[in-house]
Image (cartoon, rainbow, N blue to C red; front, side, top):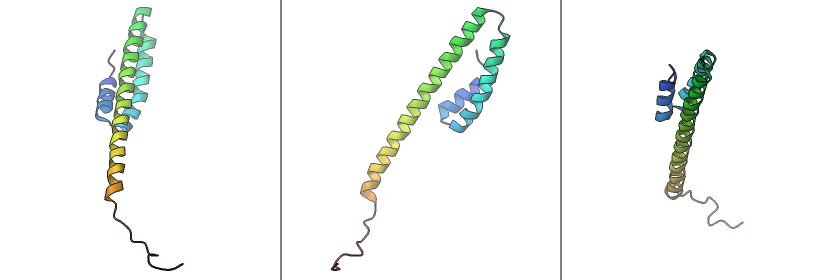
Amino acid sequence: MPTKTSNRLHAAIQTGAWSTAQELLASFRLEVEAAWHGAATEEERRTISKEVTAFLQWARAMTLTSRNHLQGKLDRLERRQAYTRPQVANPYHGLDA
């Protein structure tokens, strides 16, 4: 059940444009609700339910995968930075306390 917004939402999620995806999600919900209320039969509603559920499962998997990937990059950067930070001289070196 592609909606006007679903293709744009799909593209936003696929490219990691999370703020755009968040904005589009509200429009997507409204379009799905309108399709649901406009459905003439229970079979149409089942189809809408299956398609929306599949799309949201895909979106969730993409979001989690992206977050995990970004967390891995952050972890690697932090480890690398631990070895590349400049050594700050101890201002108290050589002074008796």
